[in-house]
Structures are given as C-alpha cells and as structure tokens.
Amino acid sequence: MTNNPMRLEEALLSSDKLQEGNALYMGGKGPWTLGSECAILDPEDSPDPGVVLPQLAVQNKLRFIMFVESLHDIVINAREQIPEASISQLLEAFNYYCENDAFMEF
Image (cartoon, rainbow, N blue to C red; front, side):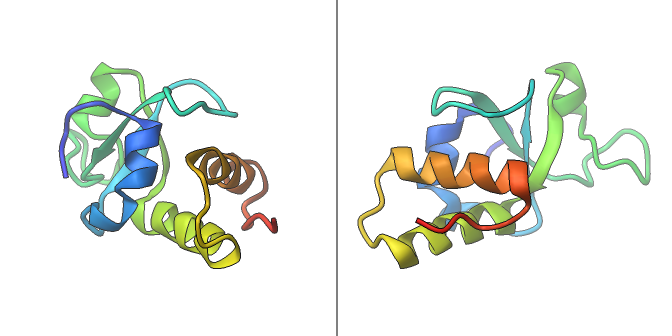
C-alpha cells in the first residue's frame, strides 16, 4: 500500500487491500486506539539483512506488530461473527488478538 504513516482505523478498514507480505508497524504499547499511528511496510526493506525492521520503522520508532495477513484475518473473523461489525468492534478484536494471540469471540 504505502510507506506513509496512517491511523490504525485506516489500516483496519483497508485490510483487504493491503499487499500480502507487508507488515503492520506501530509505536508504543497496546491497547491501541483508532487514532494510533501505524505504517504498513515491507519487512524486507531493512538496512540490516535478517532484521525485519525497515528504515521507516527505525526512523519513527515503530515496532513490528503483525503481518497484514493476520490483520486481515482479525477483520474477517470479527465480520464472520458480526457481519456489520463497527470500527470500534474491529479495534476491540485487534487489541484482543494482540494481547491474547487469539481471535476474539463476540
């Protein structure tokens, strides 16, 4: 998608359009908010071979959170349970997954 920072809300809503193999990077610790800044980056775009920390992540003090496939799976799982899941419910499912390494049951 883009190497430009975005809000987590945008990443959740566009998870089906994100390029496979890229990863979600964020600063700080969860739980995150819809306004939390994040970036979708190619983990292989690293100045140090073998390290999945792209230059933009280093410059912005972001850390690897998950691959975009996992982000999309979180959204799919929430929408399978609640077809019209709100953005707040998607955020709740995202934070739950980050804390528990498991999908949330609504």
